[in-house]
Length: 455
Image 1 (tube, rainbow, N blue to C red):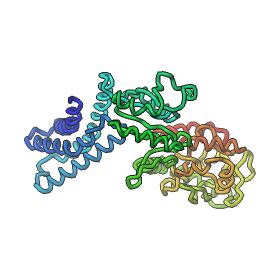
Image 2: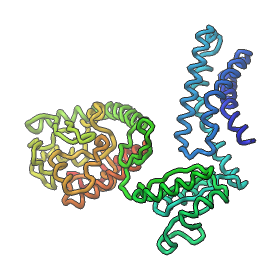
Image 3: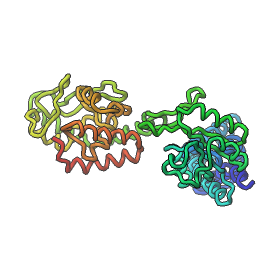
């Protein structure tokens, strides 16, 4: 009862609280019109945000998902308020500063308050013994991870009650006798007798008939049922669940820059690339002049590389060699390479030849951070030698990357070196975050100053 009341009142109370706090901070005197505005907004929050929170204490959705749902619901509230203000011609009666600050800060405060409330609620339910009781059908890596998550994250509000599998305890590896409650045929009676709230079915894909039998048995219960596919048998890259017109599917290999994350990545690239270009422009002009005066040929070297999804792109570099190779055979630069000019050796040592790639970033062909692009000829060679090599092209190539700040920069002497570089590239795809990008950029500055592998 208390939990339901808190969930119902959280959004309206935050909405009104932020409005009056904003008014006080900005020094706007009290007026009954703000009381009326707060009351209308609170009612709208009850109508739009309350459904989002109605079952949130039983939901396994991420904090980001809940916060985004709250943000969208608040946007709907704003639209309704603006429409009412326009229709009644009353919007001019309110301070623009107050309204703008209120519209801006309310969703953040509301999301933070509701997330804290969700964690507190689940912990309280767990402490009182009223948390959702849970059993798992099937012992594998997926179910072991699920059991570990339930133990490590009490805010999920789940109490693990046992595991069911047709195999004997000796064949189940690290499953303890206290965890194993019986065979699949024992699952239905156990759920009914113990009033289990949630059942996770983690039976492997190839045991379809067994899965059907378990689901049929569970239809005679009131438990919520979730299927947990053992996707860990695959090499996962940005695994997530999506739906295609209502049909649930599991993404096993996907770009990390789908949806809002792609917008975040592109926005940060543009802002940082513009800043870096402005700071580097004087040095770039000096380098361009020096190249023109010290060796014949063009200032900018252009070469085809593989970009996003393996499509050809043209990247820019300051010319550092006497030749401009871009064909079926592109020899890598080696130590004491005769093709490198004296100025080019200095530029390559400190990666100053890469500065024109800031233009590639602004064009959208490259990113500041990502797998380094290789010459097309090298891609065609290594894609046949290294499993998963082309997966690194699920994102736009970068000026610097996780492999480069971990010592894999410059010439790749053998396939093993390239394999390690690719391993780091795929690790970047699996764990991308804006914080990781910023960390790589910061580390790049120190690595480039002392790295002896660039030549």
